[in-house]
Length: 175
Image 1 (cartoon, helix red, strand yellow):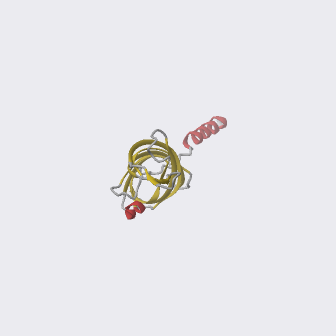
Image 2 (cartoon, one colour):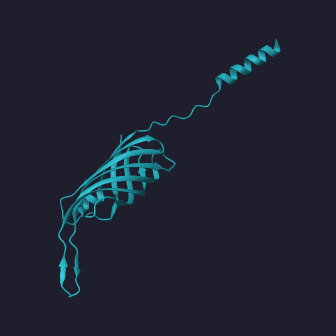
C-alpha cells in the first residue's frame, strides 16, 4: 500500500509540475519615419512586421523631389535578425533588396586637348542587393528609436550609380 501511495504521489507530482515558458506580449507592428532624411528634405517611411523575438520583415519607401539626391525613389524590402536582450531590439543585421530610380548626375572630364566635356543626365531604374547594421531601442510604451546604415550594389543598369546607401535616424511606434 505504501508503494502504491508513493507511486501515486510521484506521478501526480510529475504531471502537475511543468515549466511553462514565460509568454511575452510582443507587439508585432512598427511604423517609423526617418528624421535624418526629413531634415535633409526627403521622406522615408518604414513598416516592419516582427516575426518573433529575434527577427522581422519590413519595407521602406523613400522619395525626394530635389536635385541634391541621385536617387529620387526607392522601395526597399528587408529582413532583420536581432541580437539584443529585449524582444526585437538591440543590435541587428539586415539583408535588403532595393528598387531605385533617379537621375545619374552630370560628370565632367577633360579630353586630350584640355577641353572640358560633360555627359548628359540619364534617368535610371535599377535593382540592388545589400546588407546593413544598426541598433534599435524600444520604450515600454511602444516608442521606437533606431540608427542604421547599409550599403548595396546596383546590378543591372549602366546608367545607375554602382553603389547605393541606406541609413538614417528613425523615430516610430510599435503597436
